[in-house]
Length: 168
Image (cartoon, rainbow, N blue to C red; front, side, top):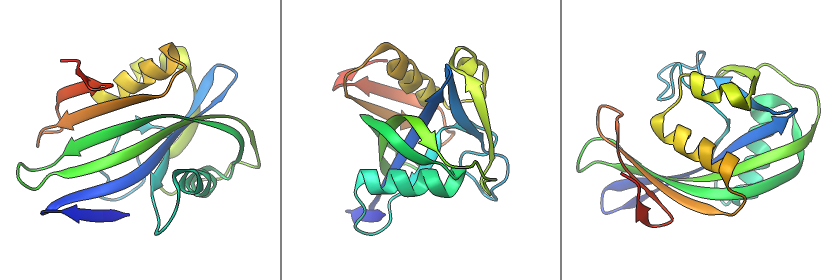
């Protein structure tokens, strides 16, 4: 789902980290053409369709990408991403979830390769700098949080703020 605010693109998406046996289900983004996440490891999720709630988007995207249905999930945070060319930025509001207790048969995904990765090994993967921040927050905090991440045109993290307070 995309909206425009005075020429600035706005998107809404979900991202979910499914946990089982001390591991997260991660997607290595190596299959999709022209992928902003090319070669990165991320959770599963995607963009809202018209009139979807965050939970509806979450359940649909997880099923489409993994074949799993979620029985237990938690809305953990909202991530505000700002990225793109100066004056033509995109602002993406990502609804961050964690989940346990999935059912179904795993399936192949056309966007990347799915793999269960021990949580202790996550920081060794090719991750976005901002993802490292919210993965750490998921591990350290139980409460809901708001994180703002600003990337420059070279995809470098140049600003971050947690619950309205600047981190860097």
